Structures are given as C-alpha cells and as structure tokens.
Length: 631
Image 1 (cartoon, rainbow, N blue to C red):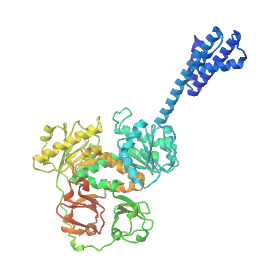
Image 2 (cartoon, one colour; image 1 turned 90 degrees about the vertical axis):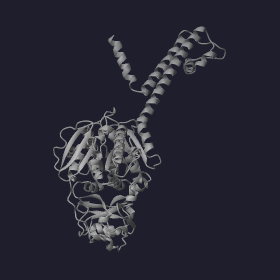
Image 3 (cartoon, rainbow, N blue to C red; image 1 turned 30 degrees about the vertical axis):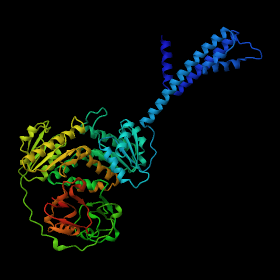
Image 4 (cartoon, one colour; image 1 turned 60 degrees about the vertical axis):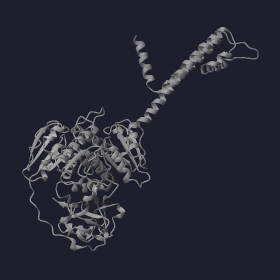
C-alpha cells in the first residue's frame, strides 16, 4: 500500500512539471509499446513470410510505429491471425497515445493563451506613464493623457491592476477609441514586488498610484483600507527602485497617512488628498456659480493649461510689468530659483535670474512676449467698499466620508452665527459639528430622494444647497441616480415657489451629468473627473503640484467670480483694461463669465478663461470677472 502511494506521489509530481514532461512520458510509453510489439512478433515467430520481403527487427519497429501513428495501416497487413492481433493491439495503443497527445497539446496551448490573456510578460518600454490600480478615474485619466501626448509618436501608458486583462483592454478601447497613444495592460497586484517588475518602473517617466475604492470581490473599501493599500504599494516601489528619482503621484485619503507616505517614498513624490480638495471645490462652487467650469478649463488638456517657463528678457522687471508683457497668456505667479511658489508675488517684486513665471496659456509655445497695450484706464471704476459678511443658512443633503471635510471648509467661509442643516440617510459618526467655530450644525436623518421630506425643509429659505453623493455600499450609477433625483426635486420645489437658490451637486460619473435636464454651471461638481484631471496634469508636469498646493489651499489667494461692475463701467472694453482694474486692488484677472451664456453648455456656461488682453468684450449687468484674489 505504501509502495502504491509512493509511486502515485512520484507520478503526480512528474505530471505537475508541465506539458513537456507529459509529452516526454507519452514518448517513452510509445517507444516501450513499439519495442514490446516488435519483440513479441519475433519471439512468437509470426513474422510475415512474403516472397522478396525480409522483415528485420528494425523494420518491425518501423511497422509498429506506423501502426501507432496511422490506424488505417492495419488494413493492408499480411500475415497470420496472431500477427494481426498483435498489430491490432499496437494500433489501439497508438490511438490512446494520439488522443492523450492531442489533449496535452490542447491543454498546453490553452494555458499559453491564458498566460498571454493575463498579461504576465515584462513591458519593454521607456519614458512611459505607469498607472497602478484600477478605479473609475482611469478612463478620464487615459483621455487626458492621450490629449497631453497627442503630438508624441510613441506615447505609451502601462496599467497594472488586479483585474481581468480582457476587461481592462475593452474599457481602454472605449475610453480612447481613436488615440495614437498605446495602452498596455498587465494583471497583477501593485502591492507585490514581483508584479511591479512587469511594468518597468525604472524606465518610466511618471508613476500614478490610485487609491482603490473597492476590494477585488466588489465590496466597498474603507478609506483607511485604501490608504493601507497605497502605503504598501509605495513601500514596494521604494524597494524595487530605492535609488532612482522617480516622478510619482499618489492619491491618499487621510492626512495622517501623508507623513508615513513621505517617510516611505521620500519628499519628491506628489501626494494628493482628494477628499479635502473635492470638498473645498464643492463649497466654493456652491457659493460661486460657474467656478467648477473654471477649474475644469484650467485642469483639462483640451483648453488652456498652466505652464512654468523661464523668460530671461524679463529679468529685472516688476511683476506688474510682467503681467502686461503677455497678451495671449495670463501670468498668475512666479516659481523662484530658491524653490518658492509665489501665487501671486507682490506687484513690485522684480524677476530674478533663475525664476520661472507661472502662466495660463493655450500651449507652451504661446507663452510669448506679445503684450500690446495701452488700455482705456478711464473705463476703470473705483473699488466698492467691502461689506461686512452676514450669517448664512446652508442645506447639505447627503453624508458619507466627505461630510466632515465639507463642514470644515464651509465653516472657514461663512460669517459667525451661520447655520447648516445636514440631511442624510445615516447618522454621521461622531459629532461633525464639534470643531466648528463660525456656524452651528444640525443633523437630521432621512432619505434625500423623498419628496415629502424635502418639502418640509423649506428649501428656498436657504442661501446655498449642497447635494453630496451617498456612494457607501452602492454603485456609482445608483449614487448618481439618487443625486439626480434629489436635484430634480429641489429645482422643482424652487420653481414652484417662484424663487432661486444656488444648488451644487456632486456627481461621480461625468456621463451622468448630461442626464439632468436642468444642467447649469453651478449644478455639478464631477468629483472623480476633477481628481483625474489634477493627477494627469501633475503626471505630465511635476512642478504643477506646487501650483495646485497654493491654488487650492485655504490660505492665500483663491479663484473668485466677482461682478464686472465692480471693475469697469458697463459697455465694451478690452480685457487688458479689466486686468489693470484688478491689479489696482492686488488681484489678477484671468477671465470672465457672460450671464447671457450661463445656461449654454456648448459655450462653457459663459465662462472664458485666458482671453487675449487686446480682445474687446461687452460687459454688463450679471456678468462676472474671474480673478485670483484673497478672501
């Protein structure tokens, strides 16, 4: 019994060696069968005796081989019944061997195709962008990277994710169907060093580490779990390329994780915390109609972009002079030779050797010294007196992990004595209003899609309404559907009351934004898209992380939309005159918004970013100027 088990064990181990070992075993069995057949024929003396035919032992071996390979050979055999019986058994053995061989080859080819299908070969690319992980942000990322590399002949993006390669390839084709950019997918875990070696990190130009949103089985992942996955991925990267200066962009959730991530990967990595960023944009957009469109214009690769560039001819010039040295670009700051980002610097600061200007322009080739001037200074009006802020009432529908960030950002903007009502389907963890200083927060549990509940809230009595996506334990499509339903109810309630109230809604999938028939510039923040746009910009230009840190920071200057009547008199005026009016109050004008086009998606909801200073525009009641200013 033990001998039988031992033999079975050895046989199993041999078969586990693969197709080659199995074919070798069949070859040995076939050779043994042929030799046994030839020896049996000679031993039994049943060699066919035909005139002029002398069957030697070698010829008998050959005949046995032919019978093993071709069953039809037996039909032409002469000889006795004993000889025919032996050859018949040989033919049956050959049929068994051939059947087994076909099965082994089929299995081997199947395994080979499955290996190709899973994408396990090493990527042989240089200067490529690596994306680690797969989330709903990937299609937008690919679209933006394709736009950024449209003029590159050999642009390549490599994706490593624990997902079926065929599914990834299908979604890639749907995201960028006509792009020249090649996308290579590999299946594997970004947390595993062996899998990371497949994507050639050492020869890449940028690495993007995405924060996962769900486990492999589809179960939603907690924010702390997402950060744990990102940290382990960063640790694996640091072990693979410890001495290489990799350009890395990683997405995190918790600020407490950032210090650990810095320790693991070093100071050169760009660590992006998406939740505070999206929360800040939600609050800012809720208070300023059209701001989301401005940010989208700045972040995507289809329109204007932010560039850093040295201008030796401007060394020694003040920042005020530098602003008007460009006609088709809007200068917003200076990146000093010492590594300091000034957004913007004092107007009388002079450009020093090694400084780079930070400019908004159509392309890096359009950042040229083409300033025209002069402008109509007589059209500029005196700045109005600043009004004291008054308490506000804000309605927040929806909760989830983003709620604490939203309340914190909102508290920084409102005047003391303000109130906020939060309505969500579950009771928030802890006391989200405990650390608020300027406003009082009230929590109410309820379904935000319930029309009866919304009618009891007196929506039109609030100054601002924010609708947050409740994506916990539900798909993005369902979360967006609930947001859209709540938005439709709110718009209808406001219409029936004959009133208007600014409503800002968080949408996860940009395609779902078009489903709402009441679309306006102040209606939507597509959170995943905005994060994807920022990540793609930083991946292409590492210095932009410093620009975004300043631009989206709660301190310093921010983007505002202010009434045009506070800058220039009504009527037609050159945009350069608007820029001069803004400079007189230590602000930078970077565009305008026309009220007449505020409901036209094809015209960017009236938003124009970076118009040429020599361009004339008719500004009147309801029009706004987009400025970079202090709060």
